[in-house]
Length: 446
Image (cartoon, rainbow, N blue to C red; front, side):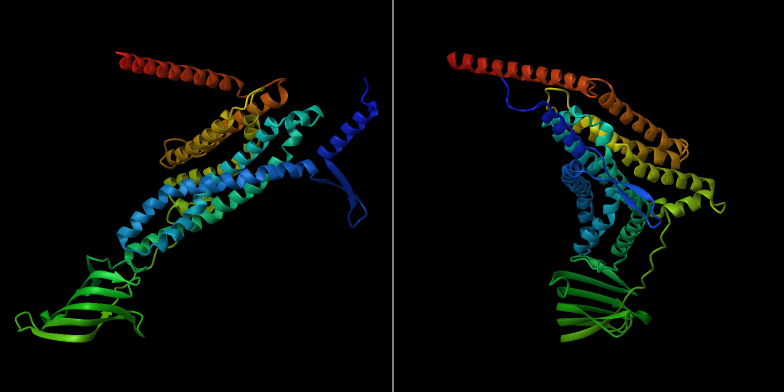
């Protein structure tokens, strides 16, 4: 029975699909009249880019938030213990964000590519693409565009932005400890304001503008001393940036002119007490450690004869690790595509789990290799490039099994093993449940 279609209809449909999925090639002429060939993104390329970009940014945000959560709790404890304003925590987290993006960006790129190809595989769209002759190599065009873009972004972050933000983070820690952010006076504790002056505040309101229950003791020359208690007080600025005014209200002042003199007691409604601010030391310059040096600065340290061999080795370890952090982006398309396609008649998400574990393990290996290279246990170059080459070759092998081996499934064996383990665990749980139900029935019957 015929459906009324002509055989040439299928041929033309196949050709049209190939044109939509294949490379869109157009020609243009430059200023000299020569033809130039331009390769543009096809409709499918744009569709694949939309599939990648949503999980990419979602994974990037989630990874960055998870990495920042632990540090955020410790920063809150640090700021509270130093008596600083809570707003400093967000500034410190902002300065730490580039450091965590060096891992968050690769996770986001890999998850974006993996989830996009997994969706194509589960909806049989990938089978349709393969049936019309679209190779996996052609499908990697858009993932590699994302990889190149984010490799450049990661290069700017780890090479230039991260060292500057790390220095700003350390500067905030210094200012918190030194009291430059208003962290030197803590409620309920004695605070030394310099030059023999001690202050204690029982209660602080309106973000420190209204102080209650104040005690001040100041010691001067020739044994002079002064002790003041006041119910209320506030700090006021003066024309001298090194001097502030402590205005006290409703208090008592005890002045002792000499060590053996008779003290004088004075009650007042308002009394202004000048306070000389302690001298604030400036924070050190950037570049004390490798974390605060940019890539050009690390390269200069590696070839400099003015530094010790230990410093050159340490700079080499950090320099090579940052290069590896950027180049690993070009491994992710191969790894993500290979792990995204589940075995036939399976919807297992084992590839998602393996990809995250593998990337985090590689990150930790390079981090450990950097530390070992800095202390001279291993060569600083080999400690980074050996794990990178191994990770790259593993990704290529998995991709080759998927793309070039007929019926190849890179994670097929692992998926079968995990399925057997899951079935065994389910059967054991069912037996335990049946045994517990039998015991309950026996007790109720007896």
